[in-house]
Length: 333
Image 1 (spheres, one colour):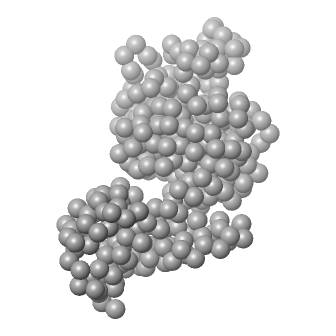
Image 2 (image 1 turned 90 degrees about the vertical axis):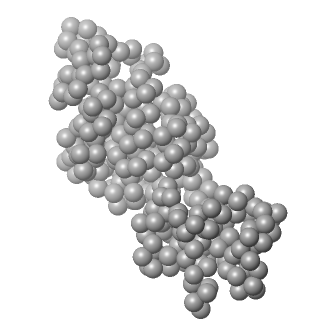
Image 3 (image 1 turned 135 degrees about the vertical axis):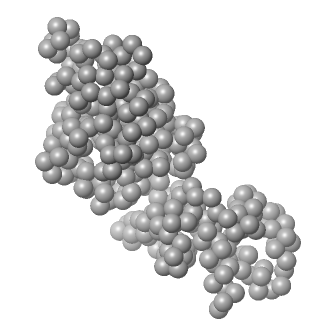
């Protein structure tokens, strides 16, 4: 497969993409045909595959190109890869081909079902992964999906769960917070690559990254629900919105009140994180808590507000629109 060229770099990929130190059929050991690059073992560059080129995955892929890594991409809708191919990435025909060509495979997908779809089958990641492949699952899919994924992988394939905290602006600027779960040596090996995307932090063994992401997200939904209910209470008690925001700025939710105030007052909620995806994440929080035998009535209530907003037709709006949904619902009650 051949893609557009970067200056001085021919993007023709040979049949044997791994840099093993053996002769690769080009007459050179440890080099791809026509590609001048340092061996990953030397720590300079990696060949990275990104599976899933939505709002987050595409921006993360651009960051990896900016950092100088060779990039292979796959998306269910191939057209989404066009900008990356124009910059020198190679579009794979399947997740299996992407995995076969890469040292590190990053998945950035919408939910556990989408993850399963790209992992399994003759064209899935498992069909292309080898003992020299590491898979970094960076979606928000929860600990149970990470356990399922670990059980599917052949012996020798490395696995990290490394979900991110942040949205499209952080992905574009490379300022994501990345919670990395997995064996310490494997995590440390890939920290330089993940560092192109933001600030990676090793939080524990496999599954700890997914757990950390749900802990973080549980606060996001809870704070928005509390803020929305506080504004609804102010409305019901006749307190003007300006006064209500001034009062809230002096409380523990003051930073969120100040941040959300322009959107609430204008009724415009710029899309950073779709409410439909927030619903999925809120469901994951509650489900994980139930599986762990942890009772979280506040998380359940916050999830109910997000679910109610989606059912009211706000699924494609930013998740912070739940604040307006709460105040509107309270007024009509």
